[in-house]
Image 1 (cartoon, rainbow, N blue to C red):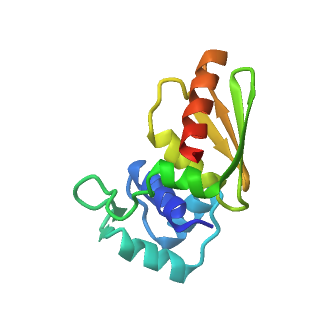
Image 2: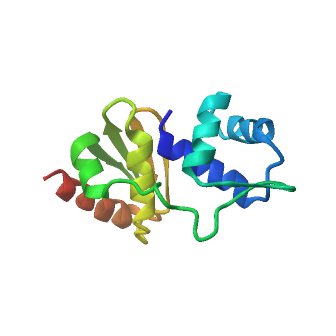
Length: 147
């Protein structure tokens, strides 16, 4: 699974409060769909600069997002998106296998008012827009990125 997405899940778990130990962190990740071993989890803890306190692991000082930036959305779309199809207020975006989640995360980060949210599988993204016009605007933006 994608390291960036897994590490974001670690940060999400810790935003809900300190996590006592690695086993509890593994359980929290499993609930989010990430099955990780102890070695991978230790690397993530080190990479994210997490602190171990008496209460458990806590977020680093600051915003905690260092090292988790996705590539620009234009680059992800250009490299991985194969097709965009509208269906009323929805868009179905086909991607190269294994790349739907980072593309969807990058689209979500754009905070376009016409985009309510995304759901990503392995090679397909479902984009929900408030109405048909919003879906058309998002489709045009994505198609422009494709060139």
